[in-house]
Length: 570
Image (cartoon, rainbow, N blue to C red; front, side):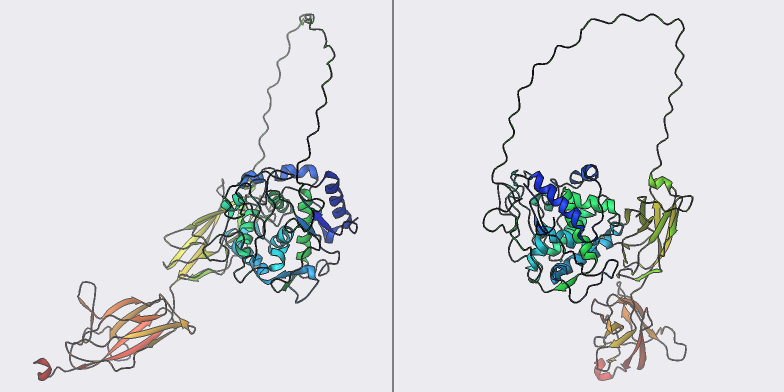
């Protein structure tokens, strides 16, 4: 059956027979290791609420038609093999470089802000393959924007959704009806809610594969989904397009890409071998949208109803000789506890040392595992991670508190933390919502460091008593790179093996104009530091100015005071 249909599928105004045969072809082919999905009767309940939940109009692409080849029966790697990228492989397993980079970048970004979703980039690749053939084989520019628009047909209700124009044609060029736009086929009204800036250019463009891939990732993760579970993954795909055939097709490509892919140059990706709804060619392929809707069947006239039973009132029953016994009170069953209420403890699940330098991102996340009184993992429990204490550190995105659901293994990981400028210790508290179950983790922010300080001026610093020295400048580095925003202490010191603050000799002034011989300063972003003006004072001689930083960097600079002569005084 698969060979008969050329291993291709259409979506849209296909007849019931065509759709049924396509499903049968998928089932019969067992497209590589395609897992079983829920029965048809289950899908309506699984995905029925998702478009409304997510603000869409019947899915991301508005149920616009698609056409795609199914993956080949020969997979790029044997089942259970490595999912690492080989250099070469079957043409169908090649993904254009920019498109592949966009999918992986989206996975990384989402894992930092919503780790509980566990978004795999291979799922984005499967949807991108079905929706646009990986942006038409990777025909994108250096920024990831498609070289020509990828548009679905007008959503005018002829065999698919009816969605009147919502963007005044800004994205799709159609001011009458909406069309699905770009490599991930977002309809404009959905893009207005879910659009993202994935490449950091300050724009949210559905025609850009980085923007579209990140938007698709966030859409698929909505509603506390955990895409490592089959049920949530199915629901996510069905929310994208509520069709069992679509789900099975995406699932087959997802399995295929999980078994191995490889990178190919942009513009050289494999394209569907026949006409598509994005590029229909001459005529209209079977399964594409019909030009006119099918006429509704003429209703048959209703038959004359048979006369009903007699309306005479029934004869009253004889009174009971004994009074009826009172009914026992109805027992109201106790509602089953929610997953959160089932949690008896939160365990540290391998959280490492949480230390970072001010302004830097932490290398690890807070990891917990929820279990019940018997030690069994509790899935879908709500865990809130909260930054507690006097600190400007926050989770990536600027959030002080984030709530996530545990996975099937009972585990949850917080988003990454980004250290603020305030140093010291604070805590992150993980709490199971609606319960007193909680655990805390110590977090430390250390000062920015420099391991080397170098004076950048070469002129000897000499001044007559009462005059000022030339500018004193230094540069701070850490592991050979500029060390910006590093605290530096500049102090006039005495000679000897155990120097102390010198209360004589050159000085600078504080904000009130008072003389000081020790001052706290901070390097610029490029590691440079220009000290305030130093005044020559005290008996003639050479004095020492020592600069030190957190991290052990030190430099000592000589300041020579010359005696003021009578000529200079006059």
